[in-house]
Image (cartoon, rainbow, N blue to C red; front, side, top):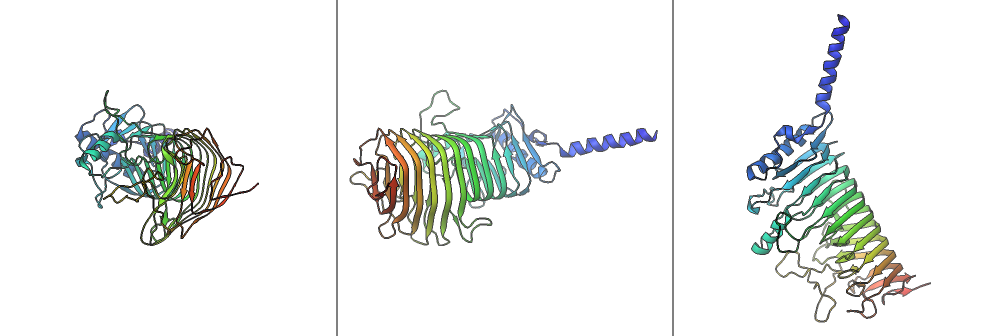
Length: 441
């Protein structure tokens, strides 16, 4: 009799432990799949938020978006102060595709990301699922109305010891992954895709997908590897951190991006980096083993203009890079080509620079030093291989071309290959040497 009682107690304890520690399924918090209505999108956003909050006090701390289900949702808010949470994304999370005016904003008036997390330690987001942003309707809305307040797909702000693995992000209204003040971040085996037509319609006119960055990162000790990205803006944008503004990083540094494939896109980019009173900083970045297939730009370093403060881009290496049939510049170092009058993002630099009649002012407030291109092969392309321009009062220093070779080059618009102004450095083992660099053996 005593043994039976002990056995019952043991089984009840085991069952209770299993109940407490199993993954928390968003279905159990009221989520409903395969329903695109506004009412369900609101409920699904709240269900996801409640599920994450509940997991944060659970023993197992896992959130499950189950495979084979598609949840339309509108975010219910920003989730903060998470520790050792795992989000297993095996199904599909789809941004509601209704009127943009109904999308929620944060306290600053900015659109809330589909998933928005802040102040996390030990966060894991993994799985073989998808986040779908339904960006097409947002891009058309901006073109028609001029009002631009688009949500990212994934925002993670102030995070430590983070892993993002395996998931696919598609058609973000704005950025796909956005990480600010990240310390010890690993992102691997990820896919990012952008359609220029409406995937919800059988026939639709193509439109330009605005600012669809693949991954934007600011922080320290960051690894991105095995990325497949097909988009029309930066595949990865390494952006500056500033002194006295963050918990973990005063400078974006110690970044490795490797073993990735980019189709279209506007480069594995450094910046943009405008000067800042709190010193905008990027240093110690390595980008290696990357193939660019018909990119708009590939190697892209952007010290931008500004009237206050200073900035630094230093110790950046691009190594083992293959660039096939670039649509614009294969290599570009200089002010971001974004001349948009009456816009906060207007840099004054024409997209068509250095064609006759165009301008691109270079600002002296951001210093660029120790940039290395090693084993870079450029095949064909519509234009000459590159443009490099810094300010005459603060030239860019220590630019190294080591095995940069161009095959089947275009002689337009620069017959000699590169436009290069206000740089110093050297070139070796390269079949076209920029005029501003010293050739050595």
